[in-house]
Length: 395
Length: 188
Image (cartoon, rainbow over all chains, first blue to last red; front, top):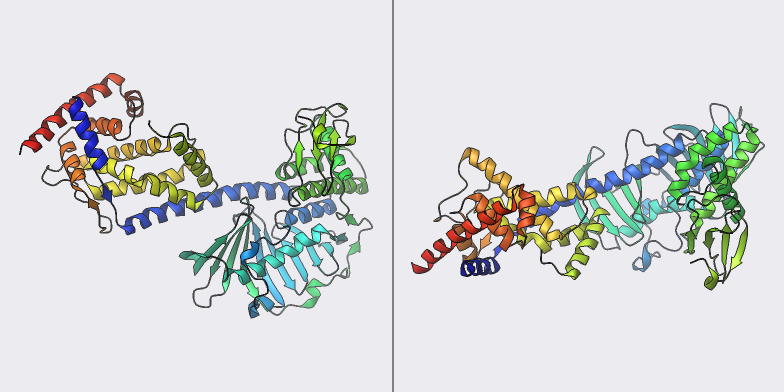
């Protein structure tokens, strides 16, 4: 029996089979196609959840607008050049990139019926932004870092200061459209072949680095991009489609003047001056109003956004004035932005508050090292803060 | 299952990256295990063209289900089990139309309807396939899974829904018959 086993083993070990490259290509193409579908589904689920949460937000309209600003800001903010050093930015800019006006649709996650489409009309450094499932109109003046929000239903208007990182985050969205097109020719490009994209034949190209994966679908006749997909930090997908350049646009559409018939709110939304204190107040709101006195299991941007509807609900239950409700919403929003700043700036942070009771002065719940600081800021369960040397941090 | 720790580590990383949508990781898995799967399917089905289709189906289904996939053993073992299952289904389907067990004089040929591809089998594979084709399918499967995929009889029994004793006896009968066939070939 043993010799038969050895003989068969030897045959197996020496047996060889080689397929043609066409077979490998067919199998890999089909498998990769499935992988792409799976990847898109995964991203869609994640993104849709976030957007569904945001859009169901019952916070007062002004606070909701603040959340939208923060949401659009998520993921498009980078420190430094996301394309790395392989790209020469001094290269000649193509005429198409000098277009003064650009119209595009912007989608967070894969386009689905329930997902909102952000429609941007860009005129120079101004953007008129509308969302498919929200009536609020946002007019963004990048030069002056201000945003005018208009609610056609209530005829309410409000200015939002977007200086600082918010401006950078917003500006980067516009610049990404241009950089993706500009840099495509100089980066290593993977050809994706021809597919039907948005009902048209299109040729696909992809390049990626650890921070961004860029896919461009272009018209095979004109070579103009018809769809751009940006996958940022391996988790956030943004789609730019229906892109048009140098179209005739009425300048009044991007005017920062409050239109006739609208009433300017006295409360100015301030998301600019976010501080550690906003983050701490956000944690207090989180534990006190949303979790019956205990801090959450984890803290992430998605955790924050999941809580957004609850924040609005709780604020309305508190029976506070619109001004106070807006203030609480803004505090929560600023706290979210403070938290969002940590990762992009490479700030070391740690959360350990799972299950800790609000008021527990002995248990650290969160610590982080501010940029260029030698000590950590440690937040305790009673929301007091101490500066602690790295060697004295909680184990 | 004989798979080095390093291989397992690499496979876990590849699966993780695949779940994150990495095309490179998927291509690496394919290149790494394609030959093992082809060999198994070709020996079980005695048709290299259909073996190719089996490998295709295994990889596409692997990706379809990757989100729910948890690598608990070896990736090679998992893929080989999938290939064996897929080959068994093909064999059953073919049995309804015509026997896939072609005569020993026509080993490892291609009856695939797929695009004509150049499939190169060496003499050892032809000899193996021809010998295997003379065994009942169930015996082939146990012999190949034990000797090629290095699966234990316990694992084989579990994957096929049979008792361990049945798996062992199929192996024993199969090997006994293979000995006669190979000896006969050697004496020709």
